Length: 162
Image (tube, rainbow, N blue to C red):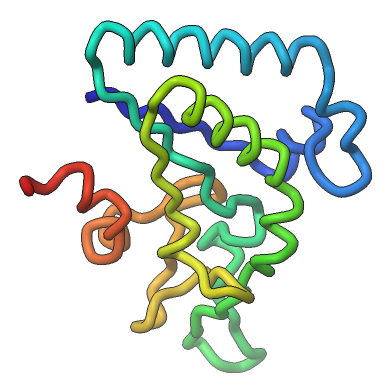
């Protein structure tokens, strides 16, 4: 089994031309060649009998970096972690071109899709802290190991024995 995952931060999406108001750049020759090469590699692996899993992107960016979450008050040495939830609709709109291409690759090649967002987020928001007030993210682009261990149920169907 082979897992393929990629992360595009807000800045990388902007540079690649992905996101609101940047749809024309998404059709750039370089990006189209990258998707074509990905599809070719996935198709070759599936043809050889390998199970390929494409992991869709998680909401990422500077807004969910734990270093930006503590809130302190003047004269008070304690702090609390502030939940700055990510707008789910904004994430879906920003990543729609990426998700469309990856879903197309999976459909044409027989690869399996895992979409962590369906477990991470509600219909409206994606939290940046868990139910205990702990940060969900390790940094601006990676989930914390403890969060994954306790909440990454999107991997169960692939990794746990049937």
